[in-house]
Image (cartoon, rainbow, N blue to C red; front, side, top):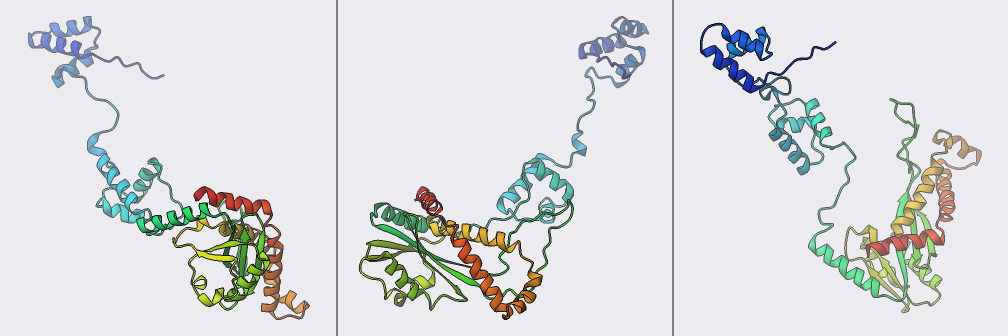
Length: 332
């Protein structure tokens, strides 16, 4: 059982010291009358202090992680989120170890996570002004709105997460040859329709002119405005030779504005479906399956991707496309 220590107050200590200075041994009886043990009274007289000592707690001389060091570490992380523990240790001249720095950061609610790149010019005054011009124009437009964009994927488009036993990596066998990319050209409207879409292997630079013609034909003379970003393929004037007078083409003048383009959300839907389907296949059996169908390996893989794209387009329902437009409108 733990002993119950009695704390001797400062006033009692002062009285014992005063009695001791008067001379004689009367101070011992005096201390006993005050309820102070003989050994404790001797300690008080020996130290000669009427203040009780400090027991337990941190000793400032042994504390390494001072408030100054903590502030310097947090300032360094604030300035550079990707700084290493080794570099942080150099910032404080090696005053503490990397493991201690890790504990300090953890105690400050700073955790390690994947870096999210943010373009420096994304929110520059010039780009904010361009974005505002686009939003005002978009809000005032009463004609049918069409958005056009492109995206690509290949055979190794895959899920980034998988399951495995605790302490083991989630692995999946793959071949090194990826094959050609497939590009999706997509045109959607604000009423929730897929106006037109095409899938092409490799570059679509020489396909975009005819794609624009097909989009305009699908509108069947309806007055509309086509919005697209500032990709190089969208700046070539010859690509718009088949655009009739009832259709006006406008481009996003503001860079780094994917949130204003509902096509981006639609591509996320398509790729999520494709990733799920590709995760079910065994890539090590591609060659055997190609031989069974009497195809070259690249032809088999290209047909596989095309088939998945056709299935994925069925996921773009009117409700989902309208939802993407509503999400873009919240940014506008």
